[in-house]
Length: 283
Image (cartoon, rainbow, N blue to C red; front, side):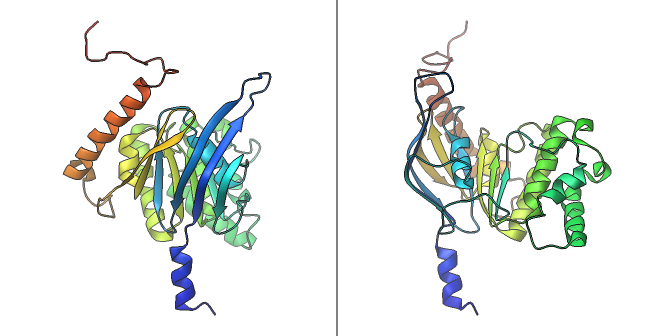
């Protein structure tokens, strides 16, 4: 039997821990190494939603891939719930690319992710149907990936990751390829799912608005080699879909601050096409 003390200790232990983590790649056919991230230290507590915000090429996806166990770090310490991360149903992952099985229907794609669980065939089917409905694809449950738009494929990938009801959910710009209206609705559904299930979430985005809307904490990263430049608590009341959070002064102030910081990071990056450009002067 789990005691109250053990429950409190479990909830106080970080779900994800990065301590001094670095990762370097050697691109195929090139001799020059690329350091993706350097000396990354942060943690994600159980039941917390953390967003990683930063310009392209700052190593956000690399952090997710290491947290999922798909790749190993070169240096530092990384654990998920006290162990070395290993891919499995306890870690849900929504990739930038859809990674759907082309010869399987929408429902079969979602059910496939449940085969490593202890659910019966009937339970897998019922859960797949539930999450397909959650992302608004009930009418396409029997459709194949070739018949879907890019945004619809990403919604299938989202349903697949949510269906395992993981303790850790890793999300790599899951709404980037989805139209604005559907994106807003799926953000609400994600917040509702998170409120009900409370997984530890690590969410990568380029969108300042999305980070503020969804996260408890925002980790701001600078361009390659990616490093953490700031950690910001988002002090907005939940649930955030029950009121117009964008009208809150705290939201407006934080959005203005983060937008300016993102602009500074891009324009101070020598590898950026906008490096040193004066955007205040007319042509």
